[in-house]
Image 1 (cartoon, helix red, strand yellow):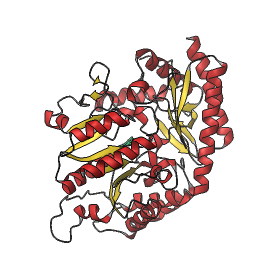
Image 2 (image 1 turned 180 degrees about the vertical axis):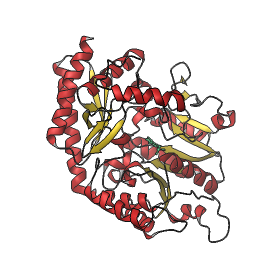
Image 3 (image 1 turned 60 degrees about the vertical axis):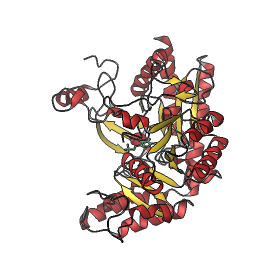
Length: 441
Ligand SMILES: Cc1ncc(COP(=O)(O)O)c(C=O)c1O
């Protein structure tokens, strides 16, 4: 195993050797795998993460966007420690679930009622089931490339490759996992992101079968570009016309503002999925919507249209951590994060320019993604990193690790409230050094 490319990582290399025996490929979470082996975390504090070899880095991915307050926040720690002493989970509901649901309903206008889960995958799965139960229809529509977790229907065409994705104006339904039943593929309509005309036509072709249209307002794997207001307005209009539900996946995009991504626009969805930051660092998912639709879960008249449980659902550890994390996220803290995001973007763009390398930064708020190449990114296909671009991104990721920054291997970064302007400056400096080493290699 060549681990000269990430230094120093002797203990991580040894842990990985152990992991290889008991975990497939030494891994139990595809997203945290990279070659020659991942670095193993020891601890985190504020915006810094220390690996098992004692190397400290700025954490610019924050558990794939979920830790908006970084590590070791005193208020979250205190609330969780207090809850731990009273019981970590019960076979009864707790007041904490009402508190967190109230917070979400207060912040998001389209959400009157909430149902909790333990992951974003479950939230999207449950949204799809609710839409099917409510409309009596089987099919969903989703955008090509968009990631919504690993439920069979939701994962169709995430990561579709050029040899399989078909015509741009009529993308193929591409299985993400081998062995996906044909029935699943047939019940997912794949849409080209942000193409108003083409999507409207495709949606109308399937008008009578569509239970819901699932859209992430700023999908990371589509390039971390925003859905245009016109596109969202078209989805809303068509959904109403054909009697299908509009579902916003705000599992990452809820980072975009105090009222979520939808707070900034005029289009309101019927259902919204949440996850990541609303758990304060603990496993979470949630589904919200108006009371009429959410009634599919109501158990008061016997078996509901969508039975939904979950042993650890709404566990009070997650509920109290999430509640504190959200209360800490004031409009001012969003403004602060947005300023840091702009500083990061400007700094990186300037370095691309001064080094004469084609590159760009997408994203908004506390989320940014680095891309090689300067062609305008407008959908999954234009953002798709081919072999050469992917190789350069892998080299950049490794160089960033060597220069003290943990970002996602795809170039995604998610900022946190303990970061300062100086920390962003450190990330930018590390990017400068990393980019020149990638260019020289
Ligand atoms: C937009 C979106 N939806 C759904 C999910 C799935 O969430 P989880 O990983 O909590 O299952 C993710 C995870 O990254 C996501 O980014």
